[in-house]
Length: 111
Image 1 (cartoon, rainbow, N blue to C red):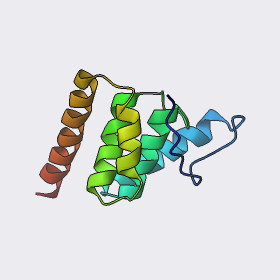
Image 2 (tube, helix red, strand yellow):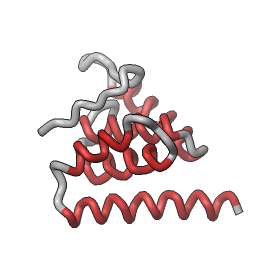
Image 3 (cartoon, rainbow, N blue to C red):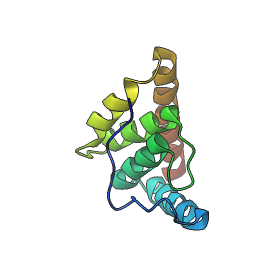
């Protein structure tokens, strides 16, 4: 099953150059570092579809969708569940560990 949650703002033609995709990921990561739930969601989309310079990585996708859901993004929980359907329990546990690690790192920076 392929995840169908796509943020149209991040969607780009297949012919778009890699630099533009890398820039979108870099911008989303910068926004995510500031706690932007939409950026978390966009990163989840990129990792779940293997787009915009991100490799397809369901563990990372789940992590970002999880962070977006916790941050109040409306579609993130549904996308997280769809990604989880294609993951093992061990992969889901790893994604959750990475999400906690991301949140913990952010709290340490804020202190």
